[in-house]
Length: 488
Ligand SMILES: *Cc1c(COP(=O)(O)O)cnc(C)c1O
Image (cartoon, rainbow, N blue to C red; front, side, top):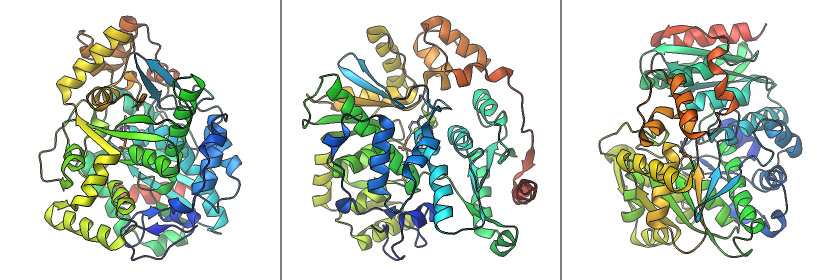
């Protein structure tokens, strides 16, 4: 099976190449041929999460050797439980906890596997150069990437975060990161400055010089197919758990509600459906940045709207990159159609899909928005009624599942530990949070009795290892220094 670009102007490539390239040269995103992939979900039902991961990686990333080694290195001992992503009944719904990984964020599921894919692809493609991952982060992705890449052979990772622009907990998570191949650096400026700086390095870096230094640049961006595939696994795992609990007859459909930003998580659910898993509705939950709710209702994607900073910051986004892959699938793999719509979005700030496609969207998806007030209300309500403590992103999804859910069992995807957003959660429970974030964690624990995840609990006592702060103009110099030091 070859990987095609959604925009059709670049050659099809092997799965190992697709992972190394990240984005296709024509600006499109790589897509597997889902029709050609075979996954018999019934055979997967009795398996463990890691066995399921092996089956799904083999089906969607054919050509990768040593899949069982990849899965073992990615996940063994790194999550709070061997189940990786437990399913917890809450009232008449089911919460799929995706935050039991090393940084208490759902991005751990994918970012634990991606470095292993890159390392293996590098070997198979005979790439002698070291792959240097550059990432700008507004908080969560940086730490999850650091955890995934540290000490992975053939890779080095450099994370830039805005100085003063991430929470105290997020900063502590990053600057205490251990590993011989990791660097973390603050940038004087905001997140956009850091991100623009990284983009400039990609655009302007002297490839020849880098090659002479024995390295090639790459990113851990969420459009890499190596980040999407691991997310397909937990839909199977959740479905198998529903069967094990006797809450669904194998073959009957389950609905999934997904707190959505870049559309990667929910698209993985659609992949699972295309592969034959009995998925009913996929409910797309948004915060006040409701561009996806509007699109799924009307077929018109319009990013010309105000940007809101919300209490569910990982979903504050106006351009959802992975939606491009859905357009590709729903248009019957029509790359010209996708290229046209993406050009319209870039030039005009909006596009409209044809009526037949709107009908398909309505068949497969529902969508709902919860603003900050509704999010806060929902956290309080779920706690009072079920004694289940959820984070702000999960609350957005819970609200949407109540609005859009039907008779089928409803799985609400939970993407972060409540302890990652302790102040907002504290307020939702009617308490006024302390100004020190570490104190708020303790406050929340006293209030609820819910244990603080280990990786967050010991954080304030850990040693700071990364203290560099640079001006945004100096980011390239920092990278070159880090590469030189990394060679020793
Ligand atoms: C990244 C993230 C999301 C959004 O996931 P997408 O795949 O980008 O749609 C939701 N919640 C949390 C906590 C996240 O970190």
